[in-house]
Every structure is written in C-alpha cells, then in structure tokens.
Amino acid sequence: MSTLTPTLELEAMQASAEEACRLMKVLTNPDRLMILCQLTQQEKCVSELQESLGIVQPTLSQQLTVLRNEELVTTRREGKNIYYQFTSPKALAVMEVLYSQFCKKPKAKKS
Image (cartoon, rainbow, N blue to C red):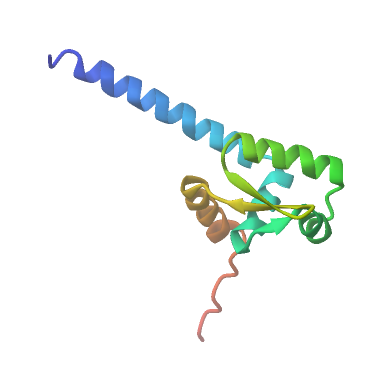
C-alpha cells in the first residue's frame, strides 16, 4: 500500500497544477482581469462593465463567456439586463495577491 502513496500524491499534485494553470491562463488576459477587478466590487450588468472599462461590446461578451465557462462568474437576469457576479474563491484569493503586489499604493514612510 505504501508504494501507491507517492503515485497518488503525484497524480493529485498534477491535477492541482493543471487547475492552477487553467486559472492563471484565464487571468493572463488584461480584459478578463479588469472585468474581474470590477466584479470584486459588486455585480454589474454588461452596459455598466462596458462603460466603466471601455471594452467594446463584442470583446466584452467574448471575455464574459470565457469567465462564465470557467465558472469564475455567475449570471442573473433582471428584465433585459444580465448581471454578472464574481463567484470563485480561488480566483479571488489570487486576485488579492495581484492587487497587493501591483495595485495597492505603498504606505508613506515616516521620517
């Protein structure tokens, strides 16, 4: 039984690595990353995302489809509007690290 353990652990690590790479691939697109940044604040409909990000509608729809297919966002319909909501805890954790490294302004040093 102990001879199977390293193989099982390796298989689990490989599956985890594939999942992590899949998430990172989604996050490497600047439009998708910006969409997710907006959705971390609150849910938004397509027109709100288009206005705040300046992404043309066909591109925005394409990127939202990718995010939906990867289960990083969910949708709800209200009348004619479709609202998008960020739903992936794993993606949110990665984005928090990205925010702290690239977006958060450093605190001023006291003299």
